[in-house]
Image (cartoon, rainbow, N blue to C red):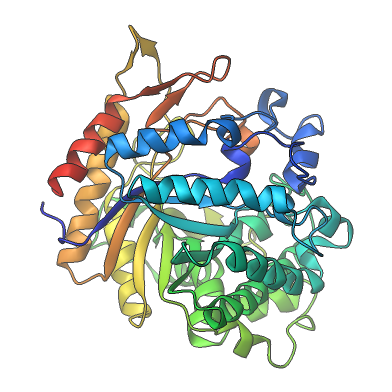
Length: 456
């Protein structure tokens, strides 16, 4: 499997998961600081207070990236470092950290791929209503302009949001992520305001001269249980309707407005049953439909559903009445997520057909396994197998015509895995959280060789 000559190889992280230094240099409080410090929200009471201490060790981490031959590094900016209260003048010490990081990356020959929002909303904005409040979208656009004003001379690739479905529906729907609210109407409003913030920010970035603008979504092929292992399986009418509705709620809810300027009827129906559509104002969809260059795809596993007459909507899925979320007949990772590599090629090919005017990039793909350090090494054969299988499907998707520009592994480092704390390790680099010692896992060495050869 040979990849295109200009294919971009890289890795990804997120600010709250790796930076630590939560009270240094004027950083404000985020919703994840608040959420993780509340008892019972995160496994083992873990927080991101220290995480991987990347704030102080970024030079060493960039040196690891250079050693692995990465061409791209996707990181996120912590909004509370830039505007501690989510509005107003920039905090110069917060901006200075990302100045240093970007310069270090460029000196190492690594292109920075900057994500403006990876879930660490300033707590001050949440206190005013968070993403359920329309004003947050305007504050986000202002924040985007502040960051671009400082870094836009060196950063070419900008992602507005990371996984707005997760931010809206796990944060405001079932409450398993920050801010921990459980209200389907707030979740639907939040999803819309996230999209509005994306569109407003994309327009500000474009106006300021940003070369590449991306929206990153967590997307999956939606399949019936039979379709997981049989591409030819044909669902009955009820199951097919369940598949179409969940695909609309997961993927089209975000990409249709961003790229086509309209919501699917299934999403409008779900909003109508959960607080109404009064928050969608005239002009919003035009603003959301600001031109972008890439769709970022975060893929981990398929979404498996079937008809479930009489079932109530899942708390994370307003609009999913009469649908059953089913297990997949497949091996699983330490997260319990099914391993279905060809789900990635199915997804990429479909998205290229549904949204042909923009390119694609795999912005996250990886797996958690129970890694063990033995004699200074981590022999993570399961992760190597996982990555090999998914990269094979990346190649097949390109052969099938998907306009795929690159692949970023999740994650560079073991890190704070949100509600799972530190017990789940996704990194290709092992982190000893007590000593902060980094060890390249076998998967990192394997990935280095793939990058060098540009082939499997």
